[in-house]
Length: 326
Image (cartoon, rainbow, N blue to C red; front, side):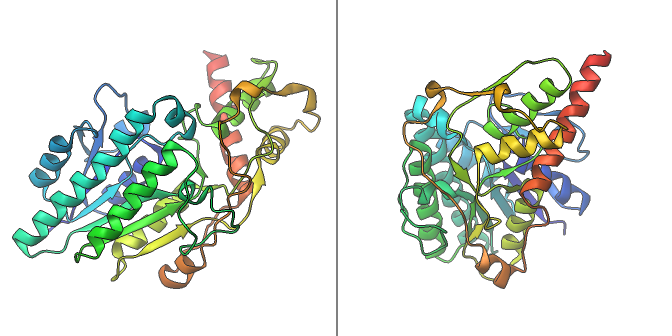
């Protein structure tokens, strides 16, 4: 019998890459999108993917979806994923990110109890749960200490997964550090940078305005991180795993790498830093120790920092050139 998979937030970069992989591998895949959202062209191109509109802050809708589909696997990637937006809309962030995970876990546990068949969940946790720990690098034993509404909601979902795992569920937390790809929306600083650099390189934009250039992050390649989540689902024992490259780079480093990938070495006067774009609280350095994932899952990143930046810039330059030719 074909395994059934539910991917929440299938319209995001992680959901898109995972859906493409699982459909190609013969899984029966359903993905959820938020009401009123517009899924990307990459999602529309995946033959065999079923889409369902589900409001994540509606516990009944989340539960009913799981009970109706009876999935063997759930990848819970959906939610508000912007730290900056979570400061603007903390109540919405708490409702969307908090309610959905409880409803989904509860429904999966109910299915498991009723059918006697193991159900598997992989939850997209976040490095932001460690933002206030004062420790670097961080691993699975690092104290949970969020600094933002987003981080706090991710800490809650992280703990709920652990609670249900203690009740016998195969529920794992993928503690994702920053991971990027051409599918990142431009509201994220990395894609804002690569899209802006591409626009400057092709003469369609004169400058780029950013926030804190000194913030340091551990940036990886989104398809690699999706592969880690897949390995967690297939692993015999559920657990929590940091998924990271183990290398920290600043936003300034990202900007430099992006301009260099576009053939521009002298970029200082093309970029400004606006105080208004700084976050209310920002951790100094986030870097993950993924040795446990390497040891137990056999996972390691295939792309490093400069590879990731170059791939995104190449994509955005081609995108800009196509716009120019229209």
